[in-house]
Length: 255
Length: 255
Image (cartoon, rainbow over all chains, first blue to last red; front, side):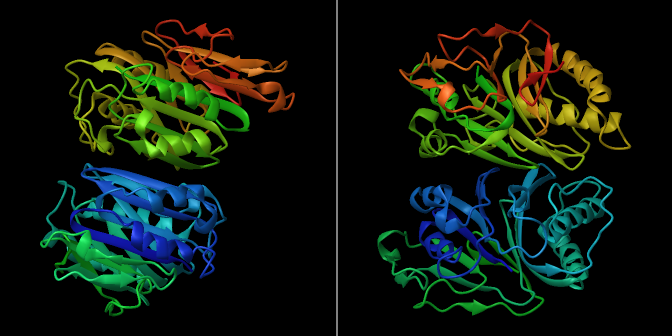
């Protein structure tokens, strides 16, 4: 299976610290060696770095660890292949356009015997269950709102229903964002924390690295971090309940 | 206006040498400072590096210059904004999915008073004439082949017609690829060459760098390079005629 990392904040924030610890799980402190990827929204734009090399050996991951790209919505993924070959086309996050926004999706889990009839607008390029689920999810959202982009209150129950339907096929932890909201669904394992004033120092589990956020933040900054497993050993992470679909906006848990 | 660089080859090939010269035009030897991007197909997968910083100052461009990513289809672009703000969402190449393949597009030129009615499947995220043209192009291709992916012989005349229609709005040099073919349309300015045995040394115009391809190639290798302006000063570049739509596959000019 894979691991997920997400960030949602009220000011553009870099993810170098969290990504450093997360990245170590891609072949150093854990076994997720089958590729990795990270998506950064910057306003409406989105840049995605993908690599089918283990993150721990990847020159692109080195760049991402060192180059502080500032974003309000980030989704990262390290892969341990369950379905689909090792290859760039099967690396998460996946991206498609819907209602004039890019949507980005990464999945941790495994959907068994899941063969949706994707004859509509969104088709898969690779061979993972994850990309199939993403395409079906966007297809259903699009069909549910033929007049265009809904409000969050309109969208949420539909997304929840699609998610419940997909969860019947197996483990379906995921992160999804359109650059405004970050949706986090827990099927079996997903944790989060919100960093806000008073800020403190945080220490990674996977690398002996400490960052003192007091020196890096302003008092109104608010940053939510969502991860399969906690990344730091001196902060309190909340375990998301099974079958919960959370929504983060501007670093706040809003639903 | 902008500059384009494309590569199409029969074996996965890195573009470090050509990109080095091209990159210098993003703020050093030329004025294209408003962002840049490069897309690499690897089989069905595609990775795109985008940056709204000038390529000459970009840490991501440094990585791309030094890290030999091997690909059979590459499209790169450096931007001098004509329409649309400077921002990540307006950096080329743009990517969408069609018929289960990623399609990638970059444009050099300017389309005046071009306001297509994009109410279908493909909508723009940014505000450039280029992304509008790409969306309209894919929308028209999709509608023209409701039963799915056509052959190249079926696709070519339709693409040619769409291209002619779009060219009425202004300058429309472009590169387009689905990972198999590289389409190159010349409206005003576009050049190409095919490197094949016997290989020789090549020297960049924009940087004092020489590469001896004899040491780097096998005798059956074939690599087409397409660029707005020639990149080397000791090779023969062919100027593509106005209104020509060329197709490259496996490093060969096939149409």
